[in-house]
Length: 561
Ligand code: DPX
Ligand code: MG
Image (tube, rainbow, N blue to C red; front, side, top):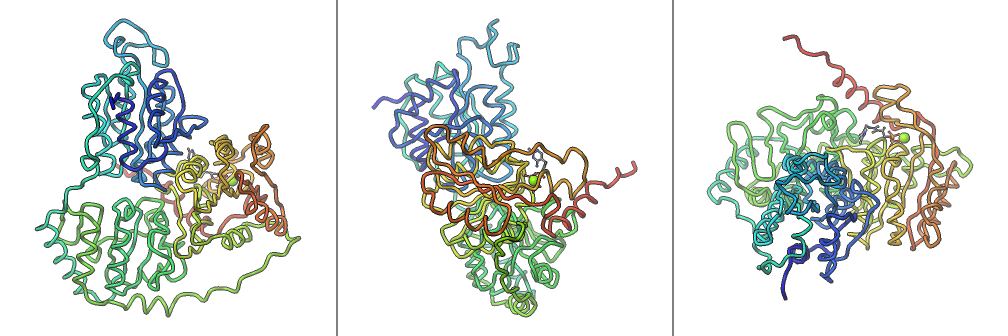
């Protein structure tokens, strides 16, 4: 078989395990899209716009480990960039591929459409360099295999996005055939001597403690070390707390699971256990202003050991060039039992409150929505929670073994969840997918529901209509937090047009919500959007406490010079 630059790229994407790629057409990528279509192992999935295309790929990467988005130059690429930056922040290898102008127009007097009407169109590449781990512009078929391999390999290794720009007249040009996939996926092993030294130092650190606790962060998944974190937990026997952004990365049905640690708004007992511990082992944590609740809950000092993807540091030591999973697995074999925090947690944790029941005629409230969603969460469920009060409502859910939870807490861009849910559903067709989305967020990317309808994906969307930007209302209110109301449930009919099978249902009381959930579970031919009407201030107590402390952190006056 003879390869072209485009079919080479398709072969590499297929070799690394992709079954789909997301795309929006434009004249600079049409030939490239034709070339990708020649690969029968890859399906092309279309999006309504490039921002959504980027986020769809981001959601797919959450489900499948890696993803690709194909866009046209500049008008498309610059839209996709927000999602690519999000993938960087969230440690997801999304490969953004952009078509680009004809090589014959380089360094000439020609002005090109979709550009700034200047002769320099390097800006997209330059921007991409800041927001990816590898960015290449392909203007020669001979160099393409090398450049594509470099970008794909870097993304997989670093769990960060990469950018590949392909000139439109190069996409179908012949090039070399791809070699073995190991050139892209083989990892350098941990440095053996460093690994031995770091495990010894960490084992000594833990040996000298009485009551350590583990704190799991979202980089654990990027490091591919979820299993090894359980091994370390089992070996130590201590309590394991999890940051909100990492919810689900450590099994919540594990006997040592001690809840979500989020400073003042931690799950009952979780904060007390972290405060009581004499050592905190932070594994893949990201401590930002939100996750530390306005810098009020920052694990630091000599009694903290921090283990990152490729680095471990503790008082007096800083080790690099090791894989987190090797470190955790090796440490698990070296440590002695330290069960005090797990024992104490069992003593202090609050008794679960008896479950309330739906009162069919009762006006719908936030707490009842969460209660009814909880009953839907099974082992094969993935819950996707949008930025807003959905963060706090989602984090409060209990995940049975096997259930997954997705949240975009570092980047925190509203609108993420609609296309990310679409991408996730394409990548994980056998899971029950539940999205919790606020009205304000939905307005950014609503049209991607149409693609769920097009592909008949039975996603269940809980659209929380609280008439505005409630999270912002609680942080700092003003007229800018009011939004134009939409008929969200009615939108689905418009998206269905003549052939769609999506359902849109508006609910205002407990009974209507329960009935709508039954309809959603029976609808296998498309998404069901349940528009839940609640009051503007009907938000979680956690949002109020968190919002107060974040507002204080935001309002600190400048330090005097
Ligand atoms: C903004 C946020 O309706 O959720 O539960 O009502 O808060 P809640 P909604 O989806 O509103 C979201 C809104 C406006 N954040 O409260 S969280 C600022 C913001 C952001 N991302 C982008 N623009 C603005 N996070 C892209
Ligand atoms: Mg809202």
